[in-house]
Length: 147
Image (cartoon, rainbow, N blue to C red; front, top):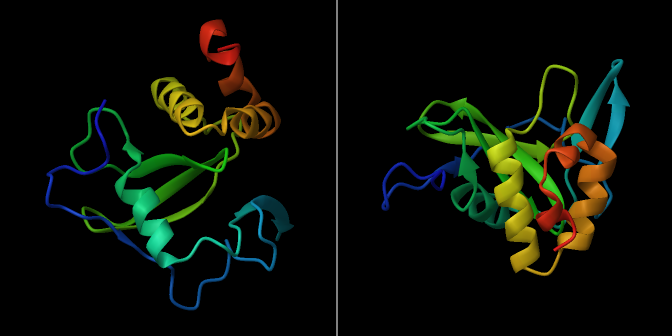
């Protein structure tokens, strides 16, 4: 599994979505709100374009894809997914929550768990994943969950 960048000099661009406010709110923490009968992930106000691009370019893309459609990362314990807006060029990100038909790939979730251990935010990651990605949490090996 590799970083999201297909080449060392390639940088993904973060697409904030001109006139798009779906994933924005006034709180400095990640969460979810119901909008039009749909639960929508909301980013903390402290994530600016620079940080969003850093997370995007250090994230983990879909396994076995040169130009990923999704890139995942973890920041302050929160799992984020960035979805492609222009294939091979740009993405728009938001906090991740599993549904019956949408889950973070196990290999990626395990890698994010190790990242959160390395940066000292595993306790925050554990809380987020247990609450919003419970089936994913059960797929993380015991040595990582308890490590």
